[in-house]
Length: 177
Image 1 (cartoon, rainbow, N blue to C red):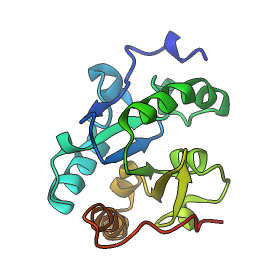
Image 2: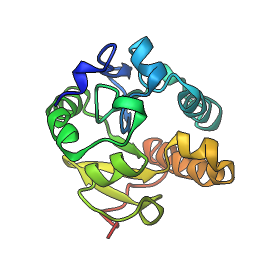
Image 3: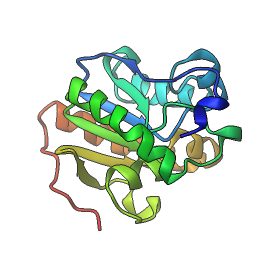
């Protein structure tokens, strides 16, 4: 797709290969490109806190990746052709991981995984399916750094995921539109 020309390295994913939860973001940022790991910058630190302090899980219990495996120049938004080029890698990751639930972090991940153009504000908190797996759309941690008042509703989303995994509730059928 051409992103390889400007990247430092591929950022494939990180976490437990037997994870029940797969977090999917849009693409690596500068820190991720330098370190070769997803979600290690400021947004990643926030995601880690939400997983560990909010959900009571360690980051090593989940798996985290992005749709794009290379950093777009200047952290610009992913382009559809770039996403399409990386999608086979995401498919293979999901086939190998077989998570019980996917959490789509932000607009690009949610819209791509749920095959919709519905704005993230309307998708947030709703389930769909990606490759047959219940997929919850929520806000990206980078957005929460700019809009900290939204952290509570994202934590509510993550606590719903935890309740589903603990058998307290079932994931709803596709309810986004």
